[in-house]
Length: 128
Image: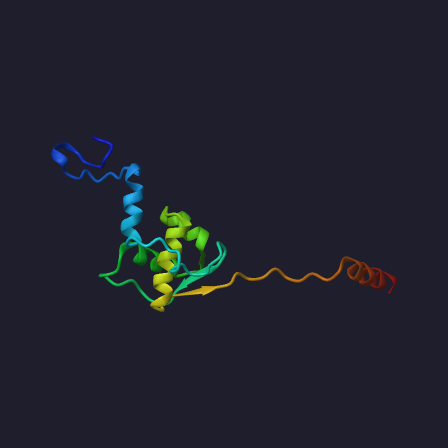
């Protein structure tokens, strides 16, 4: 087998060569670079699907909808799809514009009271 995904006679052999990656990413993003089309998402922004995939959808869009039935972060999606974060961000911008997914901010860290206040309460309770 050759390294281009072509078997004997130039017929597709079902293997993807990673050297073809730039062309693949170009096709997935439909040639967009994402300078103005990218959604304002952090790596930890949670994505939840609001719709089921349709047969005519781009495979990557459908995969995102299937994966996000339960919340996943942008970073997790990128890892599961084996795509760069910038490409996933573009795909999510499409799905957000169509109302097929919802972006949620991650749960903020709890605000912890000052340590001295906690110690004062503990000492007060110990004196009881």
